[in-house]
Length: 443
Image (cartoon, rainbow, N blue to C red; front, side, top):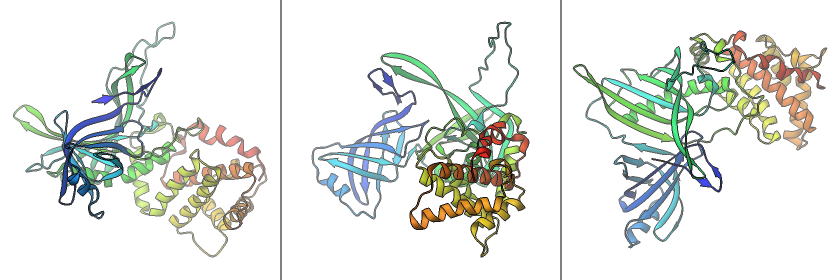
């Protein structure tokens, strides 16, 4: 079931999953019967699932044997929740405990994921993601009255971008935007909130199908890593998965039966709320149906881990954190691109970076005042970076912010070109309003 928390007149509108049950806490051969409560967010991931465990009996000896056992052995929790679902937390991290009560956390929760005797012929996995505007469906015709009011609203619970199929090693996936109705309580008043949840719905390939749902979901986890890289880059924020749902289907005559539905939940650190200027790099409505898969294929052909590192550091340079971290992350992104494009040599990094951007025909002249040359401009930036890294002299805050933004735009444009993106897909502000102020700033 889902619970809501109300403090005074305020409520957390984002649903949290809360499951109570009974089971066994174990470390190696030592076990103790317990009652448990696990609590985690589904739509705004935290860094972990909170856990409370209480010893079911007064005697503490078995309990302490579990907690004080061999640290090399994982602490696990297996049991059944109040809804009758099997629950497994394969690695529990103990926080604090008092007497027969323990608090801790877990990185993943497995629900009804026991293996079956044989692999079912049809298997599907739904992967729920952190927010990304790329899942927004293409605009359709909207009927308006003479007063300008919208008189027709789509009623479907899932809105797809038709034919947006993404090929992966585990099967073909579709990027969708799924709407879920959640009941909330605001100061004693109940209401239904329609929560949009981006998702990848994947048809499992025959050679990946297995009897154990966890085997399939682990394979999917590995297979969609590069998909999430591309989605993160184009979203200009980290996009990660929070839940997977496995469904096996069998057919009996004319009937189709959902034979098994298993869930694997994971929470991760998520990006902080984005500022208005950090929106999508592209407009989904401008992209043809095969655009994402095309960019994904170009990304895979590069097959260089430094390209992934460049994405990570570009995103880090856009995070609303300390300017010092953003400043250094931007330079690290440039260095990762130099490695990914096989551009290392003995010359200063500023000269090598200027050559790399020139060879890739990356536009840069709109990021500096007219008459500026790229190589001297980059050398000036690297000089400020070196003074900070080697001597602890951080540049003027305005210079650091402006330099970070210039490098971020250069790296984003370079990555977009390497992934064979079309400039017609770019959001207008990505090339215009967002960079116009940079051209007015000093070198």
